[in-house]
Image (cartoon, rainbow, N blue to C red):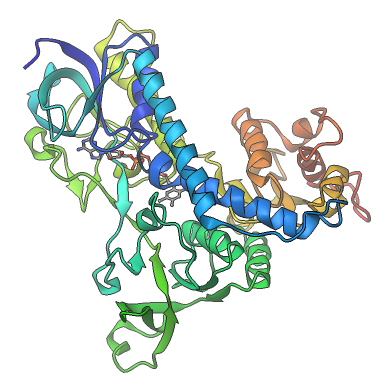
Length: 491
Ligand SMILES: Cc1cc2nc3c(=O)[nH]c(=O)nc-3n(C[C@H](O)[C@H](O)[C@H](O)COP(=O)(O)OP(=O)(O)OC[C@H]3O[C@@H](n4cnc5c(N)ncnc54)[C@H](O)[C@@H]3O)c2cc1C
């Protein structure tokens, strides 16, 4: 074992882990980062980035198809080449992964390739073993576990990685053929994003969802708008479907369902419906990854892979060992993993002492979320129903169709809604569906974090003509004061 002792060792190099390693190094810490696959984790290699690269191809195709002629551009016959789009996606992923590697090297983070396992120790010094790559044993004062998640393998769905696939399979660098018919189980965020991509590339898409609606956590009006669009594209969405099994028939796949309303003990005798397709994507859940991490050697508890930690400090039951990101079972988003990385790093270094850091506590009250369907969706804070249950609110709403810049761009579908507290005028939440919705929500999230009121945000000068004027009009509409909305009275 090397006599060198690291301040922090991070296990897992996804957006939680690679970010934490860089942050710790910025504070002057001596950092080790262990990754058994590729830096960037799920996000860069099998999640956020590859889906958004494919989405961008689909979006461009849609824009050419829907807008070009009207905009005075003649492009002739538009041919879609999915294999080419996948190659571009692979290049984007490769370049970003290489970028992260370069950043870590520049920051003098010691990168170890292989499986990291805690093999003992205490707050004075822990030992971590690396195997299956750089075989080594290192000493470290603090550890951050950022081992993430993977697609859940549901036995009844017979995931064979041949015709019955996970998101990892469908995003693999070699998946280059659009199926004639794609069956997607789960109409959550990931399911809807894939439906949008594959339908645009010409597949017939059938979606099965257990809940009575797709993307159930979003605002009702946003869901309705998205459903309208997806159905308009020809995507078949079947809700309240309890998928009982999926089988590879040799020439395709078959899913057997009954109504989700049927009680468990009556499923066998319930009426069944079957859905056939060429391939099936199962996108209904993620399993936390904490196998063979040596948790028991230091007394860290886990429940079905989910590592238990203090939700405020992110410290586990083992003093000086923290857990962040998907593996904690919290909000499974890349930016949340990175945020938790910051909190864990500051807490870890503060507990060592001698670094310019302060102990921090997590705050999840303002977490923006995005969905890259076309149109895009963004949301932050409370939904209207929940806000109304908690107190008196005003809701401001503004349509893209009434905005000059949106009209110029031919992006007239959708709206932004903002929920304001009647008593304090504080912004409680916002939801948006339409062009650059996630960017508009980012501005509102920043305003919420700064504690701004709707009136204060309405007083910020927004440059014209921009899509960001949607924010101005929607917060003004909270008080019935949107300039470009007819028939509203001050309230
Ligand atoms: C299809 C898809 C699309 C998504 N789109 C979005 C999106 O648009 N926006 C968003 O915010 N989120 C999105 N997500 C979620 C996002 O990818 C995750 O929330 C995020 O990657 C979690 O980061 P993490 O660092 O906790 O874990 P991960 O990214 O899963 O990284 C964990 C890393 O740890 C490594 N590892 C595990 N165990 C060990 C070990 N013992 N030793 C060494 N290395 C180990 C793994 O190889 C992996 O690289 C998407 C997810 C999927 C599947």
